[in-house]
Every structure is written in structure tokens, then in C-alpha cells.
Image (cartoon, rainbow, N blue to C red; front, side):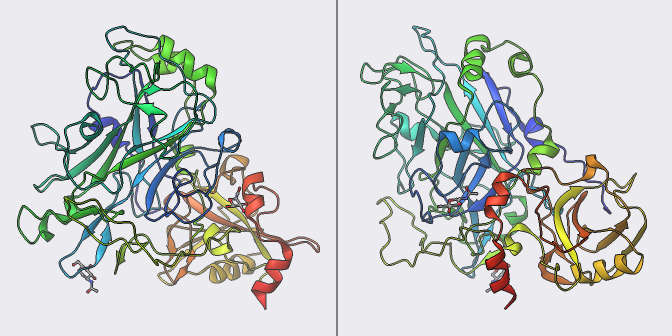
Length: 494
Ligand SMILES: *[C@@H]1O[C@H](CO)[C@@H](O)[C@H](O)[C@H]1NC(C)=O
Ligand SMILES: *[C@@H]1O[C@H](CO)[C@@H](O)[C@H](O)[C@H]1NC(C)=O
């Protein structure tokens, strides 16, 4: 690793001291993908989401699958929920779309996440807050909305030009901001019966008085839940010099084609260990310092959260410079609601992750080395210390040839162009079961291959004996499910 990327966790420093019961810090994301198991189960969603939370997320998911997750991008261990919102793009003057980074995204392959506030706003009756029941899910906001309204649902979607005083705007800010914080507050009143509903909203309601984030629950929805409030920090600084068309035409657009911001929305599927959440809601009140620590104990580390990723399940580019928003979403400015699209070809879902989506090259036959996963490294004490080389034309095969020539058991690729060889692999540096790891950088000599990341190393091991299969040992149950069967692997090679 050439740069010292210390992952300063920007959300902490940017956080408002908004009083909250507690905050789930999602340090990272699983991936950005056209997936939405609530609105579009089993198929590609119609727009790209930025998705945080537990890796039991899939095109379809349920409480049991979430609870069985092997990792999460968020910090509280008892929480295997998933949280997602539409991704933000910049619409360039020439018509291209460029994905806007989330604070925490960096060249080393780390992804930023989001902050989830669990607010205790029991209302004037200070009624007891109930934990989300198993299987509970809901949506806040409306992807087709393009007009400002002042009802509670309208007030619940806001945007903050971070660092600029003044009230948050409901729509996307019309001024140039270093950071835009997209925010959505969920309804906190539940009908007590339905875990979901046809529109994913009518089983819950905003309070009947007070405001969208606190007040008495209506008699139709008498059970008071925690108020969820999502914050996603978009790093818009780099686009400040690229505005065109004047202030009325701010150039950002959400993945759902929404150039107004009124169509920002959030999705939640509960994956909480129910007793822990209830304990936190009972114990944590505004002004009770450090109650998270008391209730939840040890948190997941940032490194652990960063290494929790999902392989892409749709072969489609969703970041970088795009000629159109994925999913035939045309940009609309309102006030009429966006129309649902007809005849948009649905992309194929990859139900079995390919080696490429899992970040490796299959060199079992050509080189006799197998991919064992993405481990960690530390510039102070190398994971593989027998030999090293680096190149601006690094490739997996090249590194393996180099390490083979040194008689090394292990070959590791890191930070795009670095190659390390070693005789052994310490357990604390090895790939961790159930985590895809943080290897996302393209190889300097082949942009179709992955060569580690910052302090993350793509590890290959010399095969012994007859069996030589990738990811066999250390992979989690989850990724084992995703692994290619031998038959598939055979057809790949043909
Ligand atoms: C359009 O402009 C953007 C921003 O300057 C640039 O990155 C992109 O390459 C351009 N696209 C095309 C097709 O020229
Ligand atoms: C994800 O869901 C698909 C069905 O939509 C299924 O075939 C696949 O096995 C699931 N993946 C995992 C890892 O559970």
C-alpha cells in the first residue's frame, strides 16, 4: 500500500448532535445495484440503489436469511437489517451521467455508507416504543414523486447542503454544495398486524399530530415504533465547477430519474435480534450518553464492515461515466409524477456469481494456483514477506509466475500494481469466512482483473495434490452457494 489510508470515519465528524436514541453507523455498502427485494422481489429493480447492511440481502430476502447473514456493513452486531436508497448521479452538460461518490468511497476500494438514526419520539403520551417485529419491512418516500408537498410524508424527505446554514430543503439544493446529505425519515406508527403491505407503506403511518418525526400515533396505527432516519452523504465538491444551465437547473439526479429530490426514498427490511432492539429502545433515551455501548457491547470494527461486500449480481455498469441511467429512467423535473416505463429490457440476473464478480481469475489449470479470497495487509509488517515486486502492468498471472519462480506457496496482489510472495499466511491476515473482502482495485496491467485494494490483498495459493478449486476452504456458506459448480467451471473454460 502506497498511501496511508486510515479510513477516517467522516460520518462521525459530520454528524449533527441530533438527539437520537442511538445511531447505527453503516461504515460501508454491500454494493450499488439494481436490486430491491421489497419493491421488485426476484427481478432487477428499475433503478440503482446504494445498499448498506447485512449480506443476507438478495433479490429476494426474508428475516431468516437476514439473520443468517455472515457480516454487515453496519456497526451494531445485533443488527442484520438492510437499508437502501437510490443512488445519486451528476448529469453532465453533454448528457452523460457520472455517479456521485458517497463520503468514504476512495480509490483503494473502500465504500462509504450511511448513518441510521433510531429516534425516540414517543410523542406527548410518551408511549412505549416497540421493536420492529421479525419480518417487518417498509418504504418511506415515493420514487415517482416530483413535487413539493407539506404533508408529513413530504416533510420527511429533505436535503442538507452540509456546512451551509439555513433550513434543509425538501428538494435537491439549488446551490453548489461540497456535500449534499440526502435524508429520509420513516413513519413510526404501525398497525400492529401486517409486516408489509401491497404498497409497502399502508401498514405504517406518520404520527397523527406533532410532526413527521414525533407525535401521537393514529388509532388505525396504534403501535409506536422507533423513528428511523437515514442520512447519506454525497461528495459533490468535484462537480461544483461543472454546473450549467443556471441555479434553477441543479445538475444532480437520483437513479430513479428524479432531478427534483422529492422522489428520494428509503427502504428498510428488519434483521434485528428482537430482544436487543427492545432493550435499546427501553434503555436509550435522548441524552443518555454511550447507551449503545452499554446495551450492545462490542461493535463491529470499520475493517470488518468494509470487508462485507456482495458480488455484483447484474452485469451492468452503474458507476463511472454512463450514457444513460441504468433501467431506462429518463430524467424528469415534475411537477407531474414520473410515469412507469414500458418495454425496458430487464437485465439478466447472475444467480451464480462469476469469478469476475467475486474478484478473481481462475488460474487453477493454467498456473496450478487457486484463489483463496481477499485478505488484509499492513505496510509495517507484510502479510507475505518472502519476495515482492511492483509494476504498472501488473496482472494476476504475472504475479503468480513471479512467486512461482521464488518457490512461494502464496501469491498476493495489492493496490493495483503490487505483488507479494510468501511461504505462509498468518490467520489474522487470511480471508475471513463469509466476507468477500475489500479487494476492488483493477490490476494496473489488466482492468478486467482485480488486484487487491488499500491494505487488502487478493490471495492465491499453490495447489497441492489433485484437487485445485477456488474459494473451497475458507469461503463462507454464503459464498459457497455463489460459487460456480465444477460443471459451470468446465463450460467456462471451453
Ligand atoms: C461528458 O462530460 C463528462 C464530464 O466532463 C465527461 O467525463 C464525459 O467523458 C463526457 N462524455 C462524453 C461521451 O464525451
Ligand atoms: C440469491 O437469490 C437467487 C434467487 O433470486 C438465488 O438463486 C441465489 O442462490 C441467492 N443467492 C444467495 C447467495 O443466497
